[in-house]
Length: 395
Image (cartoon, rainbow, N blue to C red):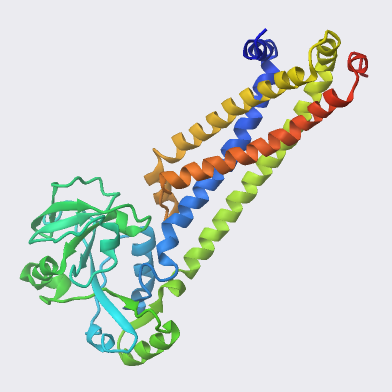
């Protein structure tokens, strides 16, 4: 009888035992792959905030620090404005390579706006180094053109009304994992027309060049602590304060680490229970089927073929359980990605397909090691025990 046909018959005749082993592999894989994918998405969403790939420093009004964090990390819309001209004070400081301004404006519940609570981010395309890294390509915004975040359900060419002006969506940003995903980005030229308008004098005071935050990128060899000190001295007497990005995101990083650890602990407990159950199930299965193995050996069946039957059976159940576990995690985390991101209230971005395949390969590798350890009991029993002893009744 062919190996595949024999193994399928064994699985169908021992449906309950086979189902239990399948479920154990399913639980182990779902826990390992699900935990890994979740934590990798968390780290992927915040990785550009650490080190010097996004910006080295942020300069914001000290009183609006929490609002700035909520906008950047949680996507909560807000309007923030400096009262003083601070940009001219820092661009001349030694060690500064680039300074780019951004203006945050929240839409109103009035007919002038498509809907309330949309975060508008005005940026200067000439000096920008933050928005451009997620635009995929260079976008020269003309007139009332805008870029939309990946979570805004916009398509290129769509039109949206912002402060009484119709903006055309010229492009969609890549997913950032941050508040940018739910924002609309317009050039400062268009923002200045809005802020200088008499219609919105109650919000902006008919001013131009209003700034909410300055992003600073330093020269390669510049010392962050030294430049920070110089900038804070230059800004003395204003409401502005300099925050290194790593410092600004320190609390966020600790929350991400805490959540990753908690999820990992819960997953580890589930995996331990499943692995212990798997070992117990495999051992019990061998005790129940040792007489069959003994009979096959006594009839002249090579030990290698008997081992092959057992190995193929477990591999088949493993493959089915592992595949089902990964599919379930993908069904949960992929369609509900935006809902998970909103519920977490912190940066969360899907890892690349290559990263997901790498994670899946590592998960399968760990599963196979566990399977090999579990079935080693069965293989050792078949290899070391004489057929006559295998056929004896066990008490």
